[in-house]
Image 1: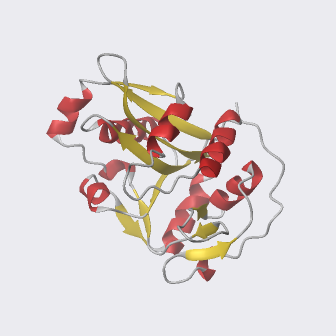
Image 2: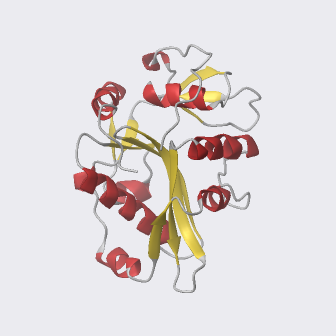
Length: 219
C-alpha cells in the first residue's frame, strides 16, 4: 500500500542542465515528496564528502540493466541455491548493511538512512534480503519503485555472491511483472557491465522513464 506524501516544496532544474559529472543542483531536502519528485524527473541525491548542501545528480550517460540482457553466470545460479530471498522483511537491516562505514566508497549517511526508511514506511522503497542456510542475513539491496521504475540505490554482501543473488531476484521479479520497466543503476561498474548493465544517453533514459512511470509497480 503506497501513501502519497505532501508534494515537493522545491523546483529542480531540468535534468539536461546537469554538468559534465552529472551534478545538477545543491540543496533542497530529503522529504518523501522531494525524493519522489526527483526520481520522477530522472534525478537522484548522493552526498559528497566535503559538500554541506545535498547534491542531486542526473548523469549522462545513465546506467541501466535491460531486464532481458541480465546474464547470471552458471556459478551464480549454483550460489543462488544456497540462499533464500525475501522482500521487504528487513529493510532497516539491509540499508544498515549498505551503510556500513567500513565499506570502501560508502556514501549512505544517517540522514539518507532515515529518509529511505520513511519512504519504505510509505510503500515506495523496497528491499530484497538474502539469507544463508543458518538464517543470517548474507546480503541484499534496496531501492525506490515508482510505477515501472526501480531505482536500485545500493547493495551489500557478507557472503560471496549474496548481493548478486539479490540483483538476480530483483530482475526476475521485474521481468515476471511485465509491462514497461526500467531498472536504474545510476552509473555502471565493471561488475554491473558483466551482468548485462549498459549505459544509455540521458535523453534515452528519460524517454524510458516516462514510459515506465505509467506501468503498475511490481512490489
